[in-house]
Length: 636
Image (cartoon, rainbow, N blue to C red; front, side, top):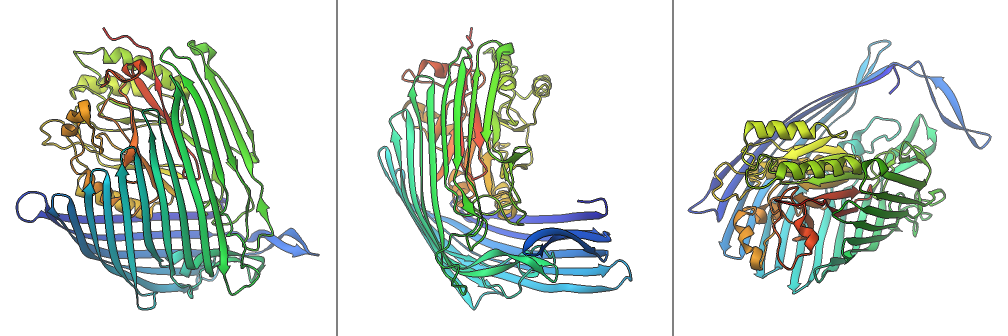
């Protein structure tokens, strides 16, 4: 902001939860939750003049006009609760039901800083509650039926809304078929209704969104070399809440929110990841989206494409990496053009990004070449100032570039059985050479949690020239509160899956962490989320079945709790000392090899016995790519 414009914020967030097992065992649990939030913000505008666009002889022209210094105080108070019962009434069947309620009070006071006068711009209360139930049946290995029903009650809706949801997943060997349906219902938020910002003034007459969403698809394992995924989706939303630009401005107001009559979005997504030859991996992802306004009070909009929502994306990568350190990779990313208004009279052109990188086994010869054919400022594609522009979903005021992360796991520093300290130094050098935006350690940094080993781990990680984050593993003997980190259009959630009373090394997320995660996902500003913890949530078979004894014990409950958050695009984990790429329900999950010793099978490629790390590329449209690097090292 300018020197004479200041914004101050403070937040108090509370969340109290009580969990009580009913009867014997863990098949019946009652959970009660109460939360209270107090959010305050103050915006001071002490500018004497402001500059903005106006039309002069039909052309947009910058003009200055007098401005009255003002102060805006916003307060929001939220009180809510939830009561839920989870009952596993049969070995493969679970019933979850309960009630929840939330009341939010919003008040904005505008104060004239010249004469001291004040008035309430808005003072309103919103309330929303529901009764809900969900039935889950694992009727065959790898096959699940989910049926849910939620009856919504909101002060803004006309009566109540019934929101059903049905999901079916059928596993047929290496093929998994998927189908889902849900009824959509969303009430406008306080900004949509009551904002006093003249660039996006609120509209108190907004209606809730109501609609239907369908998707069908399949996941096809390609032997041991890859995975092919396909999804076709349809979203049909009535009274879609959308931003509407007002140009030229009317009484200083340049934008507001409105309901579009009906918007129907159809599209498909196809993704392929495969190892086409030893050490050679290919990844392709294509998303096609067609959002059309099918009904509206303005006939000129009917048949038009919804602004900022219809870009098609193509991602391609080809990477070679061998344990000796030779590495080369080609990335191509293409984004099609899309309109910036609902009349489709203005648009942004598409752009293509091509990245090439190679490395030889001499640190001094690490060469990077990048070329970006794009309109960019500091790595950001820019366009005219629309307050909700950016990406398919309309977040932020610009489309940030991708985020590159390196995941390392199971360092086991201080081991007396394996030379893990030496192999870690090799991996650490590779991480520095790759130069990511951040590093994530998914547990077991130490072999036995000894202070000297922790000191060694922290000292080595502190040599990195980029931020690093970590979660504890069962060997670390250390608990940690969950954390969330903003990474451009993404938010990384780091959770502690260790348990103090673990007998064999198993873990759990726990109800309190799950509720924290659900709450943070519900109010996060970023459109996409990536999860990270230590223990594997998926089962292993055959010679690796022993890993199931040390897995995440509450994976089913956590999976159910994440179903309402489609913005979660993946999970990274460690613990298994093994390269993993598979599905956990509908969520893609990836395991990372250890930087020390590996859990491998005779049928695995020879390179899988080498230490490794996993590279991640998170794109602003919610797609991601990830692959494993191996580092040459001889144990013994």
